[in-house]
Length: 434
Image 1 (tube, helix red, strand yellow):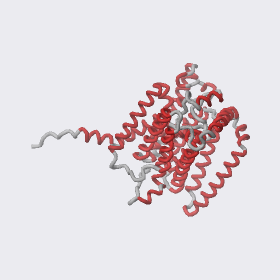
Image 2 (cartoon, rainbow, N blue to C red):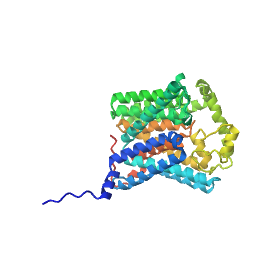
Image 3 (cartoon, rainbow, N blue to C red):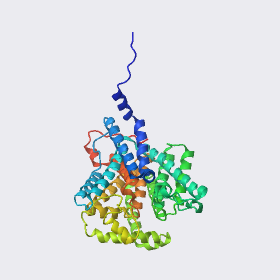
Image 4 (tube, rainbow, N blue to C red):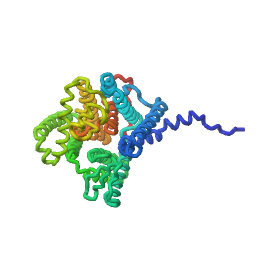
């Protein structure tokens, strides 16, 4: 006689759910969604609502990581460059004139850093691309829908979101992202993700094509001169990778050297001809705003050249020297409008060098992986990094929220395939990327 089967032990059942791929996939979508929708969440629920949502995701990620600890490879968990930069930003509280603001800024930075590490460890590259594509399809669709509602149906701005309703005149629009430059950045990342989805056949062609059209529409309607340059850089990088991936392995180093030399010459040309390029793009007013801010920042950098003023991430408006900069430039700024200068200003020369090492290693590693690995999904990381790094000349998005999240995801995934510490492992790890 057989008795009735006992229900599974509750803690074991909960652990099975938390360690399941479906839970990790759902949590990944929520993490990427919150990172890209921070402006929307802040507009609806304020900072308390955003921080509560972020805290919940961190707690869930910790629990999930503990539940999956047997399946996660802990060897060489983090690239050293990430650790150095995070530690130096945290140490800046020791000399900051606004220690409480530095503590909160570092905490905000560490929260997104941990979520990025979680996503990179528990999801394969193609799964991250799919999650990013799913999130951006929703947010870009919502942005266009709200612009149509504001500009065509109601003919009124949606003030609390910053939607001006300019779609009737074909832009500029900003959607749920707060500014046209951020919408342009998101649209470009979305286009890359959608194209990778199409090329990897991970979604149906019709869906991928419609998604690409949505991303292009968002990019065009921003009217942002910054993203004419960024889109051109991404196109050139994509063509270079296409050339490299079709070059025989024994000849790729010659092509890499040629591309490096061409890039250096192009950068010098752009620097020398910057005034003419700005005039050609009709971006004089935007550049004037940035140059005024940068000039005032350089004057303050000299006061703390080595260690910086102290990390804040997003600039506080009521704390010196940020309030003074707003007063002098007669406009409010939440960043330096240049990621590298922003890092230099906040954490000095040491922080700047560690940040350059972080982004440099992430890009070189991901570029080499994309050059030498057959799956097309490896192209996603270097192209996203091109978007983030080129945009960094005019925005500081890469330092916070979705820009910071994507930077660290790309860095960790690239280090898993190109880290020197792999040689210390007893056996190689075979990562599934399809």
